[in-house]
Image 1 (tube, rainbow, N blue to C red):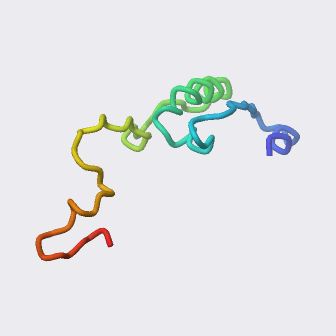
Image 2 (image 1 turned 90 degrees about the vertical axis):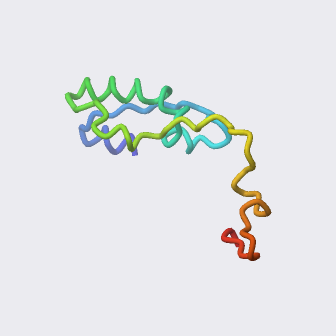
Length: 89
């Protein structure tokens, strides 16, 4: 895709970031990935004259909260109600 963009005259940069966490696809959608790719993207957008500020930061990936010490959501026994109804099944 990079070759097609640049062959058509479009400004483009290709960065190989390598391995990230357990799956490199998580780079763009995780809080940890933001500090890796955001500076390069903002610099590129500034060079080509495009807006590079977050207009809606509430839609950006957020840092996961610290563990509370309470039970995990996946533990069905604690989420069952008194009448035997289990909303997770």
